[in-house]
Length: 294
Ligand code: FPP
Ligand code: MG
Image (cartoon, rainbow, N blue to C red; front, side, top):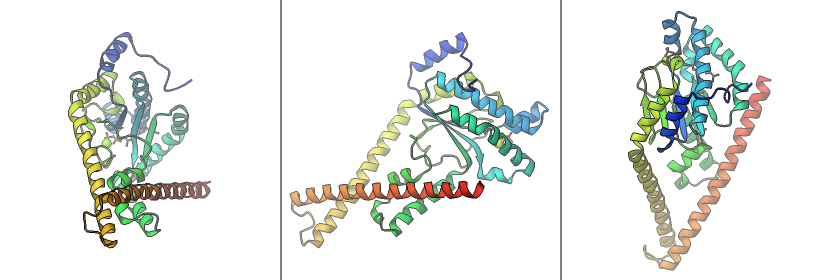
């Protein structure tokens, strides 16, 4: 039986879900599921029991998200920092991951699990990938941009989260999706993760809805600024080319237009080539990793 699809909402929950769904809904929600150990302590059970109940809560939360029409969920399951915990706890979390991961991933087409992840590591890796592209002659240094960095992140196939929720009263991001959440609604809730309820989720979505227009405005003006910066870089490139050809800096306007189109098309082509090479490099890496761990 499916973990995710089983269990419908109660009549009251369905009623409230329908009211909430009348407003703008987040398409992608990220969770920092925090407070498992404090929950275990509070309930006088083993730590591992707290993590196990945390996993059950994740399955339940995914059902609520599905019912609310949220199409993508990303969770912080284990950070690189978590390796510093006791061997017993790390082994316990790894066992839990081994038992549950494959089944969860089989069922889910909308869940991203960040495991042994930190955002700063992800960002510096993306910068290294771009430097590699330049070194290999696949990219020009002027191709390096925020939008290219987006495409070098592990999350390149997902839109940025609209809403990020952290439980347990901690009000920090702990190195989770730092780049991707610059225009997300951040909601910090005091409830411990294993006690998370449908109503906590509704409250977070209501907060997203209350801030929706400001978030949208900030995101739109950022995208506009990004386009403007790219245009400026292309214009500077064309001006340099025209100067090399002996034209005055403003040049002949038809020649300028042609060069501008050519420059954009060539950049797109370089970037596509680079991204394909990057994809091959990643596939190679995972194949080698699988061979080592087999
Ligand atoms: C934070 O609570 C939780 C974790 C470090 C582990 C998160 C993992 C799960 C909820 C299980 C999901 C598992 C899979 C396989 C996807 P904490 O340990 O930091 O508790 P505390 O904040 O009370 O100390
Ligand atoms: Mg914690």
